[in-house]
Amino acid sequence: MPNLNPKIIFLGTPEFAVPALQALVQGGFLPALVITQPDKPVGRNQQLTPPPVKEFALANNLTIAQPKNKKELEKIFANNDCDVCILAAFGMIIPDDCLAKPKFGFLNIHPSLLPEFRGSAPIQQAILDGHKTTGVSIIKLVKEVDAGPIYAQKEIPILAQDNAQTLGAKLAFVGAQLLVEILPDFLAQKIKPTLQSDNLATFTKIIERDDGRVDWQQTAGQIDRQFRAFFPWPGVFTHLAGKRLKIANLSVLE
Figure 1 (tube, rainbow, N blue to C red):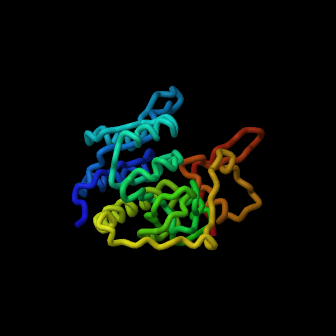
Figure 2: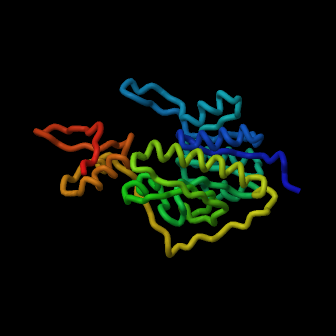
Figure 3: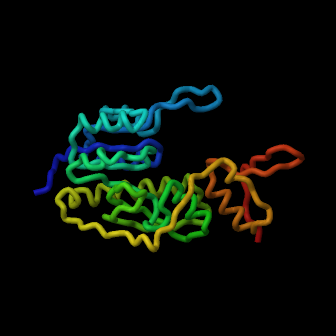
């Protein structure tokens, strides 16, 4: 018989992770603990600001932990048993001791159709490469980055006007719905994951501020994809008369 009241630990930090946590709460899978990154200074005034996952957890009276490093994370897991951990854009590598802790392991929501676009920037890379579709994968979290076997996937179109923000929001919603759809069968051990083909894997790199620099030797289409991939961060820019000029909007002319 499936465990109808599983003990769940949820790990996530940015806006992308909020729909998954919301879907769990609304679906009756109330996490026993929400682990998220510490509050950070934001804006010109460097005001200490909680991450979006913490704000949602507080509004829904969920227990929160905010480890500053792996050592603190390991201590949290040492003091908390659970059936399953669900991770969505947490922002910290999970130590081996923690990976082994939950009875059914970790489920990770990744915004690409793995093994394509492993790494930290799958949404941006899909737009940069001019793909017409992308998707979300729910995988078992393993030591190798985004290499775990796949429990479920769902494909969605990339529209001509999509940027990293709009596409990320769509993928977050699709991933959240897919999570609660498969979770009962996952807990009942009715789903057998599919191994990824490492030979087909592609990888993304960490985005840096200078990636937004426009190379005017590129085609208009390439510059448009760069603009959309890097909206809202880091944005695209050029230099004019010795000054850095941030480009607020652009469109491709036929």
